[in-house]
Image (cartoon, rainbow, N blue to C red; front, side, top):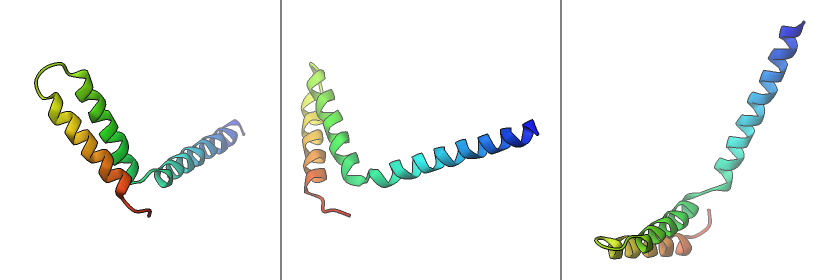
Length: 73
């Protein structure tokens, strides 16, 4: 009896996690990855003091621009 309830609860939790991942998968697309990846690279380039800071900033700006200019799904 108790095992049956435990199995039902585990199945409900499994379905919830599956629907959560499916919702997240549908919510994000490649444009978001480009924009937030570019924002991260831009921020890291601003953090660096010496060395390759300019390369990170330029790459971040380019990735953000590509993400902004991409068309919808």
